[in-house]
Length: 405
Image 1 (cartoon, rainbow, N blue to C red):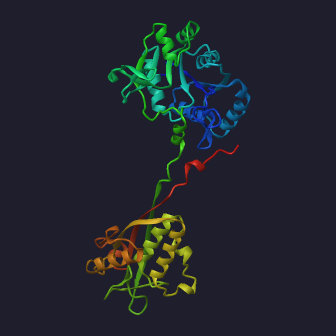
Image 2: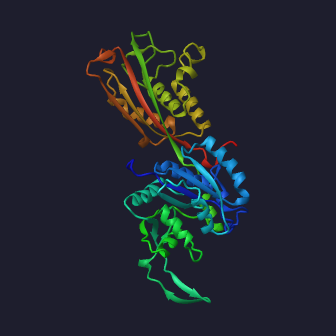
């Protein structure tokens, strides 16, 4: 939005006394994800980056209490916007008029939003503001009506309206502030929204695409919309890397890769059995769990691990993952060595690793490569393995995330 366009203010209408949702209290004060519904609309206004300030309109008998709540909310979740509060009136129209009186006189445009629409997204706010900037004096977001609409009197249909000409209008609605104030002053009868007052005053009302998700909480059944979905699985990825040095015959451990003995291969220096592939894999699994590395869990200074089978170590790591409700999905491993030649053993290694992990072979991948004579592996001084593991765990339920007041 160009700097020359002064940012509109927003009215968030939270003054209704309606209890059609049968929630035991006005719906705009219902808690959702730890904060009242009206605060979700305020967050959207803030995140849109095109609103200059907010006026909250509350029931007169609740205003003092809600002002204190606003201060607490703002202290923990700063809007980055100035805000004021106003007493509401007996009708929605009265509440808007009283809220408009507090909007600074220098402000040219205003957005009016119902606090019972907590699913408001910043993109819709920006769309309304952009249309005002283009010269519109009244803007409403709307979605096409999908049901057939009947006019009913005394339980009888008196007319069927052409669906292609009908739209369901939402908030926020945007207006040129001076014209809206005049429209309210000249109002001849109560209207259900401010756009109707502007229509009555002879002004064009521009329609932009609304958002089907911008639902209003009205009836008891609508409360189901506030139920958080089950926690979604959270992906985890871990990376493992290990190296073992080759040593002379009878000076180390026979080379094993993935639990498979490699005939005729150089021996490796190791405290455990020296299975470099399972060590890299164990580190990758620990990475998924954020639980350090195998050196911390199985230090080479501990004689209990002298010549221990790496399959035992891997099984212990898998138990750690199970205790954290982490479910392994797949692994990908690369053996890097100038010698021995890995290809003759690759299928057997892959199959055995799948067995150890309790995974299908299709979820275990194994590659082998040389480094073209470069580096310590190229000089046949050792072998190294890289491993990547992916897993899933549960996200914490968002409904458990609350602000501490």
